[in-house]
Length: 260
Image (tube, rainbow, N blue to C red; front, side, top):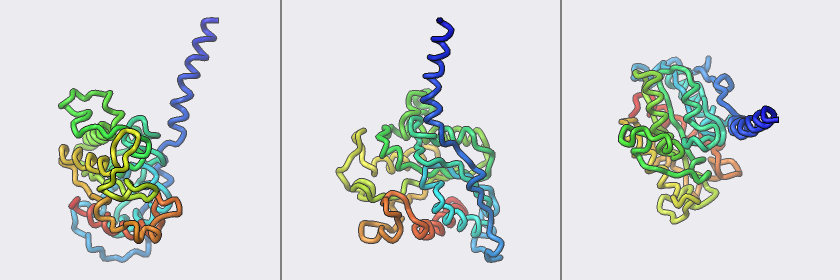
């Protein structure tokens, strides 16, 4: 009887983990290479990252089919192979879906790593944390892996270990329009953890500054607001449409060319 009880208990403990990891990274589904009909001459030939392999980690904004519009622009302009490990619903917090921490753990070795998130940490109410979470300053406190900052620092540390010579870049969260805080950096609108979306974006930048990781502040330079978002977003007002990615893709490619 005791043996049966232990089997049932083990099964009960495994079920939540299986549910959390139902959607895993599938890099083969988003493997993008330069188009056969692309221009033979690129303005980025000779740049540091031209021809390099690029890996992308994030949530739905990094992996949905519309995002391939931007990544095809990168591939064509940079002569690069782009592989996406992102999973819809993922965040930096270990508690947010198939998190970027899991994605990084299972990733292969690439020349350039792009961390692109996370609206989901905000919408999921995961704690922002502080830039020093899960660093040598707190003795790599694993309890801090539940915060956005702890997750960011974990990912950067893990990627440094995976390929010390790789370039690591960060794309901040994009704007969204289902609530005021999603696009207004001065909004008093906060989530259940007591933070605004701007707090999450600011913390992303602070973590990267600690590590010396170059940041593309998409939230600030996206060029989309309440007056024109209908042109660039799906009806859910959360995810960009193909035109939105076509707008941001060249900016991302220019950044990725040299990390500037």
